Length: 185
Image 1 (spheres, rainbow, N blue to C red):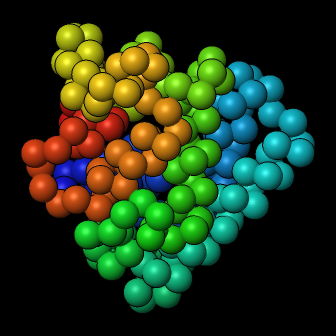
Image 2 (image 1 turned 180 degrees about the horizontal axis):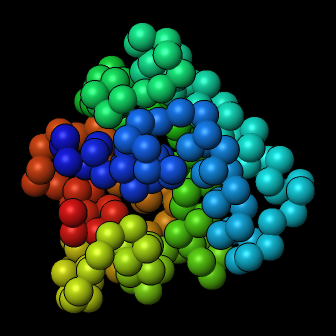
Image 3 (image 1 turned 90 degrees about the vertical axis):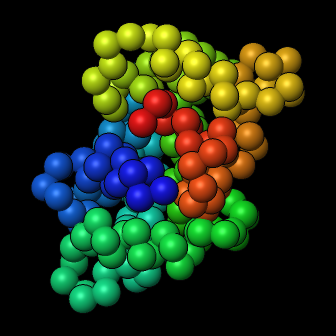
């Protein structure tokens, strides 16, 4: 679980790689999300929407996690906040801004916008975050995520992604499919 939360901080939130989370990371995430979702285009309206979403996420996370109120969230502060707000809880019980981030993240993964994250999109997401020298472990990790319904539809729906994300953060065990949500960590 610690490694999974470290991954979320390092590869998803700490965009400027300075070792802690601050408001700048969330503004950078807004720009990244706008450009990726727009496949290079970033309209002012979409960027404003993402800035609002990420500002809300920052405010919610900092209220929960920035214990010393210095405007920076350390890795340990983030872990403590995830323990308080996510561990042992279902996705629906997560803080609202975190759920909104997770749902917007699905849109970024769903490159072809068909409502399903298939193996090709999963591969792409994995290789953009970590160094991978063999595709086989990625494909195996993707297969572990799928249940029978996922296989029928050809990948992960938004609802299934939310369920898996909830398990990724909320279940401290290491023996469930969601540990592979972002690839073979």
